[in-house]
Length: 104
Image (cartoon, rainbow, N blue to C red):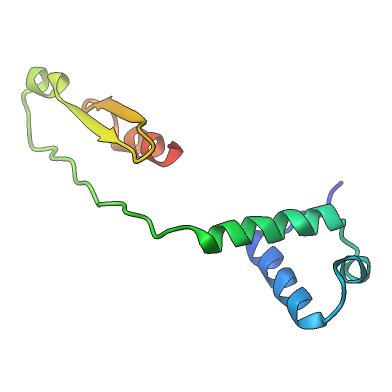
């Protein structure tokens, strides 16, 4: 069974490496981790640190409309910066909308 680390544990490991003064190979041997795993986490955290701030805007859905036929014809339309367009009927549960928005 593989030794799994949480993102917080992996980040702490990378910080310890930076302060250790050892080469990657030496550090991984001391910590008993596969160097490929270490490189994976280091790359992942570099990507996270270099991301531009999110331009997300909070959205509130008005549930006060009681006429279901009017609501069925309406949809939430989103266009992402990469050109992907998402059109979701407002009859969907908010949890499904949240899941779809977070997927893209």
